[in-house]
Length: 324
Image (cartoon, rainbow, N blue to C red; front, top):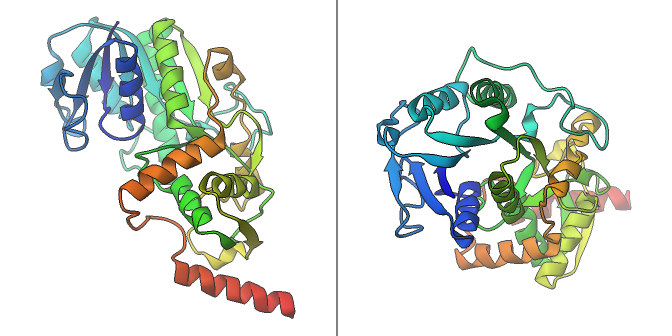
C-alpha cells in the first residue's frame, strides 16, 4: 500500500513508520525535517510546515491511506485535507484519551462522553489540549466519513519517548532501594508500548477499518506500585515503594493521579483495539527496552520527577513521620 505519514520523525510517528516499512509498504513522510532527518534513508520526504499552513509539497501524489500523527488543532486537519483533495484514501487520525470528560467509570469505552470541541484558540495547554483534539476528530469525520479512523492513545511508552513519564520510573527503579511515590501505590495506571500502537495503526490501515479505537495498555490491569516493581524486575534491581504526601511535589508527578475522578482515565477499555489485533507487549519488556535506550543515550536530565537529592529529602521526612 501507498501510505503517507504526516509526522514520523520523532516517537509515535517513528514507530508507525518502522512498522509500515517492516511490512514492505510504500511510505512517504511529510514533516518540517527538524527531527529524525537521518531516519529511513531512501524513504521519500515531503517538506512542509503545519503551523504556517505550508502543504505545497503535497500538491502531487496519491496515497491509499494517510496517518496523521502531528495534528493538534483543527486547522491542521482542514488544511491537510484541502491539500490532498481526493488523492487520499483512508485517513487515520492519532487523537488522544484526553478527549474524554473526567470520570466515566472503570472499563469506559469509545462511546464515553467527550469534552466540548475547542475552535476559538490554537493555544495548546492543559485545559485546551483535549478539546482541540475533539475538534480535530470532528474535522476528520466531517471530511472523510466512512474513510475516517480515529485512534485514541493513552500514555505511550517506549524507546525515543521524550515525555519521560514512564522513563522516569524505569530509571528510578533501576537504581533500586527506597523509592518515593507522591501518590497511592494502588492507583490504577495504563501504559501502552509504542510498538503496540504502531501495530494497531498498520492493522487498521491494511484492513481498511473505520471507527474509533482506544489504544491503552498493558493487557492486564496494573497499579502504579506494580508498574514500579515491573520496572525493577526489568533492571534486575530491588525496590521498596515509600508513599509520601502527594502535595510534597508541586505541579504533579509522572503517572500519578491524586484526584480519584482523574484516576479513572487509567481504567479505559481497549477491547475494540484488542479485537482489531492490537498486541500486548509485557510491561517488563517495554521497561527493559526503555532502560537500554536510556542508558545508550547517556541518561540525560529528565523533564519530570525528582532529582536524587529531592527524593532523599522526601524519604528522610517520611522516615521521621514514621518514627513519630
